Image 1 (cartoon, rainbow, N blue to C red):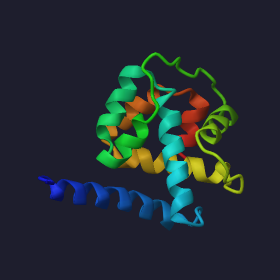
Image 2: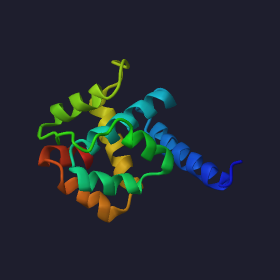
Image 3: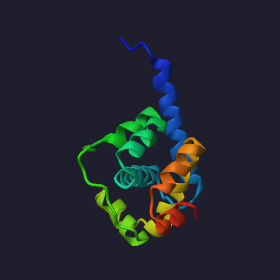
Length: 141
């Protein structure tokens, strides 16, 4: 028996809100593509900010996004040290299959901004501080 149905409904509403905000940007042609980029950006951030900060970021996410964020993550993975925007975009692309038609130069900065807006702003600053300067700039576009 489901005991916390309100929690499930709230988590679904939070997830839908994030996708709706992404769709309002007019960069994504459909909700599935918005979700694919959101998930890939979350995982790319996770793999770049260090274990402790990655755990703090994960705790800020809604339950549905948190599940996708931690999917496939191993604590022993090495942190990506690549510093360029192109390296970051390539890492995002590695986290999904297909959808080559998505313009990552437009989609990723918008998605990163939405991610940083949906978490506590103190945590958002800490996430940014753990990224190379060039990638920080992309997050703030």
